[in-house]
Length: 117
Image (cartoon, rainbow, N blue to C red):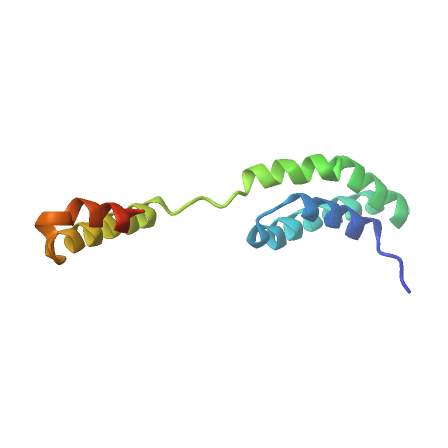
């Protein structure tokens, strides 16, 4: 069984901090590319592959801190126009039910309150 590389371990730790699943893959690809680029630069300076990987990872910083910062930066944002339209349509539907419902003059407010709840 092959041991996971240090880069893979680093990326996995970062991934565990990012809660939004859709953001994980692109973010991890970007980090991986940065680490590989920096590792290759260190190799071209004469370091061994293992030393180059270690230094490239060290330059990225603590994976937990990096992951937490990326989690804050990549939070899903609600689609406010869609939520407002949904609420408006819901309220309009409730109002129509009150206006055209049976015995709307006698218990319209009570029916609206039951429907609203």
